[in-house]
Length: 340
Image 1 (tube, rainbow, N blue to C red):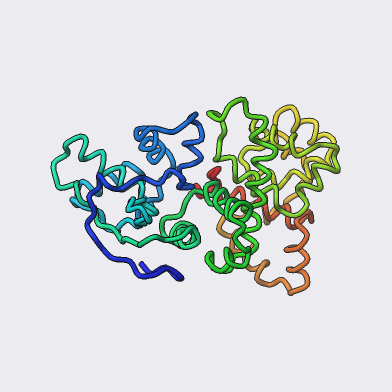
Image 2: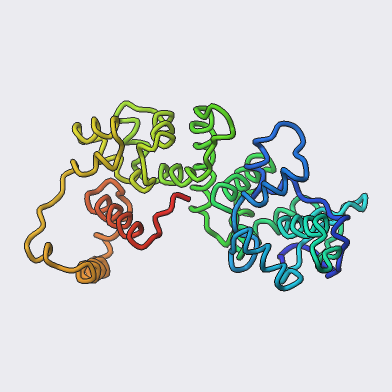
């Protein structure tokens, strides 16, 4: 694995008992923050199992990864370890794999689990560790979940003060996506976390709702209707905005008095049928989904530049709102409408 800006590593089989798990790993910190004080090894192991399913190239689940290692008798991808100045070996990438090896040793699972393949770097500074994490987990094949990505990006920008241009370079030049992710994390922490009674119910899967909040016109429509972003956080928590893609319809809902009233009582799903909808002619009503999808695609491809740009830049336009609603419906139909 080549990592830009980091000196060469040495591939070694390291004694797994000598490797420390990285408790600052952003992929699991969200879970470990539930515990007061220093988490135990068992709690870290549970956190790794609960934190997501992105530890191997196929993005298999924690249990699938465990079974794959048992079947193959080893890991396919070496972990990445930093040998600190005092000789301590800290796992920078591959904490789940290390935890599994440790558990196999403790449970006396048949096989040789005392040694684990590792790429060992010597005395890396924090900037080089950040470079590895960014390349492996934000643009690589073992991506963290969206909330953990955003948490780490926010940390690098506001605590490590890593230049924004450097973050963009490591992440492949996705400036807008990075900005949205950081802003969404900031809004979630500022408005959502304070309304949660305890950290045990802080639901990071709601993060995509705060990503939706960053879309053009959403915040403005909330404030213009006399509400606050804390109100928005309550709507997310109370599932008045479910699925979270319905947030794209908030400007239309809040502009419609009857829809707004029903939304505040029962949620966006109940309110959306009250929005103005054009009457479908017989030809459209009788058309199949395939025909409608093909017609829409042809229509979009046939737009001239000015018209396409107008729709693209005005998310509150009827066309943009209708397209967002269609995207939501299609994603749900195809099984892509998850909340994460």
